[in-house]
Image 1 (cartoon, rainbow, N blue to C red):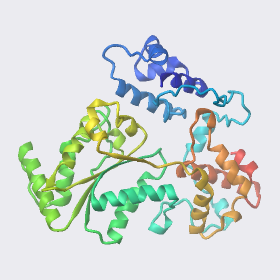
Image 2 (cartoon, one colour; image 1 turned 90 degrees about the horizontal axis):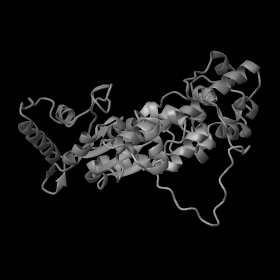
Image 3 (cartoon, helix red, strand yellow; image 1 turned 30 degrees about the vertical axis):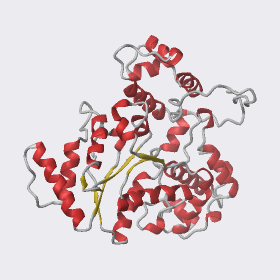
Image 4 (tube, rainbow, N blue to C red; image 1 turned 90 degrees about the vertical axis):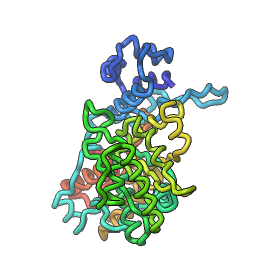
Length: 389
């Protein structure tokens, strides 16, 4: 695990001293972790893993695999790519920042491509939501938990479309007139600890449930009476024919005690019937917190299903075709086939083992390419135009 971290740092050009300072370790302590898997006495391994994962992500390095256990080498295994392999897409930090920066179509680009609507506008109906087989599986998993019960964590990178699926879930429940009450605690400025923001605690979750399920009820003052009141409100609502689902976005910012307490919310029942389902939505740090090696949340890990929202990869062309169809323009009128391949290559910095092939980065990169094509006066976005932005 830690030797992989050493390789990731080298591939991404990150100095070990910079990582040590960022996560609050001395250089010798980080060396001990990397080379011998040893931490100083009193160090919290889980918190350190989360901090390292966040630092790698922020510096566009491979932050999804470094905590995996190393597999012993096989005699017939292929040799790893050389750092000088010309097939490796070596993207600079400046280029990555450009790809992640918000881009908007210029009026000139809209006229140039005959667009009366922004193809990358936020979806306003279910038909505008792109559903690949992988995304459809995540969508249906969320829907089944909301209707029939369960405990689910949906994990995806920033810009992967997690918020869109949450919004579509709520819209679908209303559209299909399902008797499901959705509880969504506000997570504005929510952080993992109170030292940097306001953490979401079980008390706040209970308050959100009561405000949604029984908005006219006067909340009891003592904790014991308040949670008994919550149980009774959920039971009465369930007997009236409703299901209840708690949906928490930005769940990677939940403190560990709150994650642990979610099991107790799941244990609220009317006889054998669970009264509350839970869907957590968060970035990869949530998966680190839900590690089976973390004894503090072991009971949660044993009960929760984790699904990952994948990158577009082979679905890139389908995604683009879907977005431009909604705008009334065929994809081949905007970019050539080799441009799609060039876009895929540009957003796959394979040296670090990661990818940026998520809707938000795709939209920003293609928008920049369309603006440039309009400036150059070329009829469609070509591979050269993509490579030039």
